[in-house]
Length: 149
Image (cartoon, rainbow, N blue to C red; front, side, top):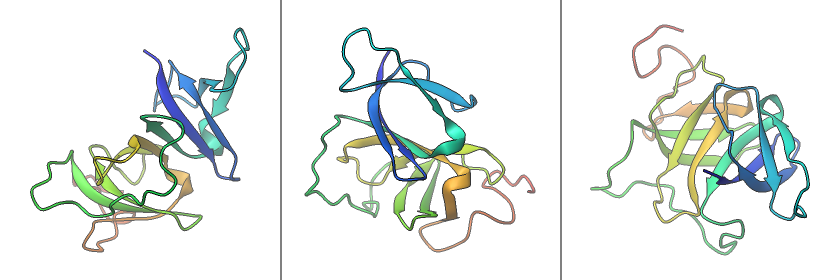
């Protein structure tokens, strides 16, 4: 199944397209850009150069919309609530089923369930800080499973 993704590089480049072989354990994946002519070969995207891979509903989104950065009181979520601050200052609030300080990356599901973003795979090396919504730093100490760093 093809997934619509937006790959954001650390240097600011953006690639929008579809992928059928994204694997968080792999060091690369292929993307067919949204504007590629038929028959054009897929681009090879290396995880080491990325900030994050956003799985989206559509490529346009709504540039005037501000996603909600808090959870609603009765809102269900997957795993642990987290706030991710990227090296470039962007903040993402959501939940993660699999954060660990030593993992190469982790998935985040947005707090705003109406967001154009369905989920994101965050590349750990592009992150400045991960904490709980109460401010507890998640980058140091132990991860949510209690495994020492």
